[in-house]
Length: 290
Image (cartoon, rainbow, N blue to C red; front, side, top):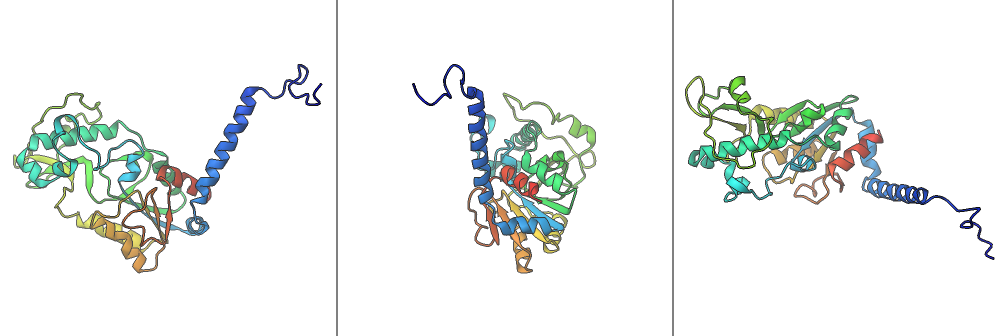
């Protein structure tokens, strides 16, 4: 008879679910250790001691919530266009109904997704430090997570203004767009409403390719980064100018800059430190160690 009694009738051994749970815990611990290895200890030290943190966020942060980036091909009504072609003054002049419909559907799509763990981690961190967010994203996910956004560098899907006199659209005009409704399964071209002041068209309140960034938003973002103890560049490719130049101003003044991105970018060579994790993983880990 075997000396091993672990599987005898009197000693059946641990139940299978206990073994499975032990294995799951071991795998979880290994994964967490691997993720923590992505952090240079200096990054965690900087985060612990910083009292003023400036964040520049990009498309990668929102992509983790399911918001398509500008690299995502279009389908349906807009399948013959790339997003870069639709987000231009030329497209607006050529076919405003198609462009308007695209932006209405994009706003509805954003309202249909939720802030992710990265958005929420920044909102929690801001309760303990002076944390400013400047974003290249036109969604409202930072705000819905509980953060106040200092600068929407490329505008917002949820702001609309006259193309001529700059008058903001009235609340009832925005309400009629039903931006909280589900995305249309069969979208059709939709004529934009008219300005109540001058009868010109109401346009999306975003910065199109070829247009200048709002100077006040850019200036506020730059000031926040040059006055910070720590700058985080999160989920941005580092190639869209002039927003990509903002962390360089901080570097020039000796402010430490950390890039958080699962992939190397155009900015990686300039960053003091890089964390090769998605922001939805990196930011909760980082803030948990504060």
